[in-house]
Image 1 (tube, rainbow, N blue to C red):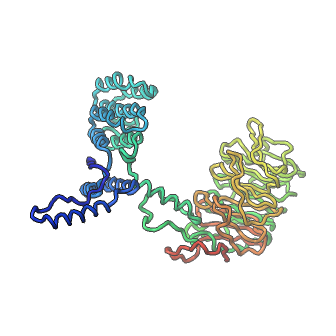
Image 2: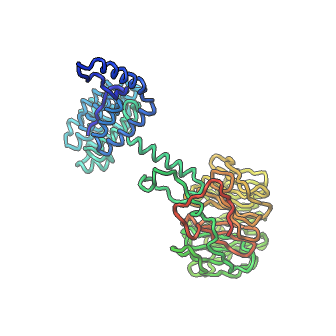
Image 3: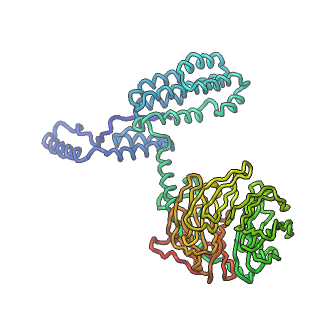
Length: 571
């Protein structure tokens, strides 16, 4: 289909020359009225004209061409420059010589006339590929030698294009060139690329109105404090008639379950990588593994792993969720590696009774782990507890293995996090704090680290730029080890326990909490957000319970909370 263009951007709502000769007096009066009306009818502003053009383009894409003609005629606007219309039609019809001569007209309208060479290159490339598809090898060769090469532009690409001469058939060509073939789809893509070199006053960017609306929807979602579901990139799932707003009732602020099976302080909790299980470790010498119901998200006791004489203060799931490693508090020199599926103890590791093995992290390959403690041990071991490497004199508080399989991050007693490379035995500073780093965790993409800092609270660091990004407010942190976590959809949220018995949740970009969850009666030591179910959060407390938080049990979908609602939520 072709675009039609119309005259200037002035509006002419009336034609004042269609009167009968016999009505002179009335005619002059009417003419004065109409003239004054024309004067009152101001010229469209630039933004009004832009909106009309955007609507026109959108209607044209829907095939409503008569409506477009009417809109342009009545508004006195034009959709695009006549030269652009001509150029568009020639490209879509594959009239390459005419399209090339159109470029000379367009050159005068462009901000950067040097872009003409790039546009010409794109045109000739399409022409060349279409000749090849049609089996016109000599014509294609002529385009390559006599038209593309003299441009002296992108010679690397010309070498690649010349290689396509060897393609045995059209299908082979399309596969190697990653090109759709001659016809409307590939020419439309070509036009989209060509348009980027033209000012929007000459030719609008493709699907401009949809893009603006999509950006608006995305921005609203990003600003929504409680948005915790997958962002659908399509526009069909949202209403453009209302601003986006998630209800707080869809957010994990409500106690779904209180797990009371532990009979002493619960020091740690962690969901498995696949989100189907939760492991909890307690001062009562046990680890309990809970099964998450895939439908109701209720938890039920699956296995109890017993015999941890010192209590269990840290847990780490293997990447495939087959194994679970349990560590104890400072005076514990043992590490336990359980097979979760069978409930059997695979390895009980202790290098020396002098050791303190309080932290552990799995290598992404699932075949090795690192462990350490505050007495200066730092080991890399296999699944049978055999020592593969050791690093002397590092007093480890908390550990994390990065995705490269080589680098281990360790927080130490010097209030810093350092990166240790076990392959080339190098180490370097990443983070330096002014107070002890009690624990830390790293985002899935390895970019951000979340630190619980003694007496300071929760700090977010960018590991790549090695800068402090944000300090989150509200949480009470002394010298207890409290474990915070990333969570929610896209890890947009941060949760932490606190010594004031609450769970705090922040949006990653905002320093003030979006929710404070009350229910526990003593310090909350650890929180874990389910990595698969964004609305499921667990918290472990010195009160001996594990609380499971989820959305409100009965939701009115239409209900959205006002901006002034209190952010504290009771059980």
